[in-house]
Length: 199
Image (cartoon, rainbow, N blue to C red; front, side):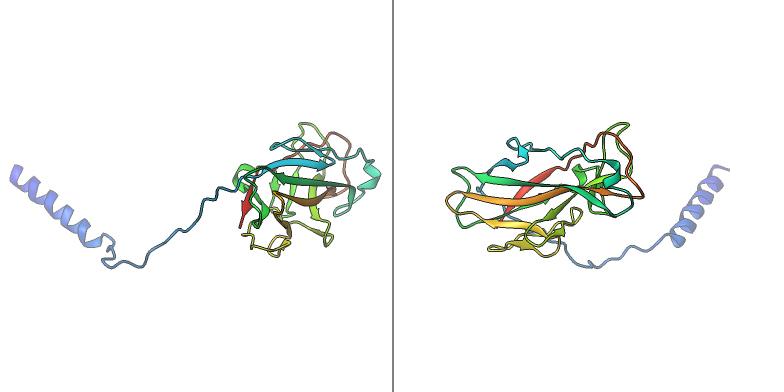
């Protein structure tokens, strides 16, 4: 009986083995990761309607709901800048903003703008950034590498600037964007998490 039980168990194991998926014995390829760490470290300070160092606050104007009557309408254009400086802000390097998308839960990948995070705040409104150099929106959900000497990154319209005299300035405009209909009254607060990239 015991012998039969073992044999039955072995038959079951062998039966399962016949139907088990085959594992490829040859490698399909390799994945190589390349990167670089730089000692360029600029201090980032807000300029224009932005204040702070590192953690920047941009104050948008108070606008009426009538200024945002339907989907796609913008209002409250607010110029601000990120001023890069410091002894380790290396001349000749080109700098641009890199949005840490996984650390920016407010990011709306459909509009490339930032959803309102104010509890009980204004409805149907987001905050969008655009590049004043060409008056086109910045695609916050798209990151791409800056190329040395660039003034704008084509893939996402992020402004870029080459450091000279240990300083550079990146210019932006923030604006309210009506999304999904007319905006409703209330507070607007949102944020993005960023790093500076250099090449």
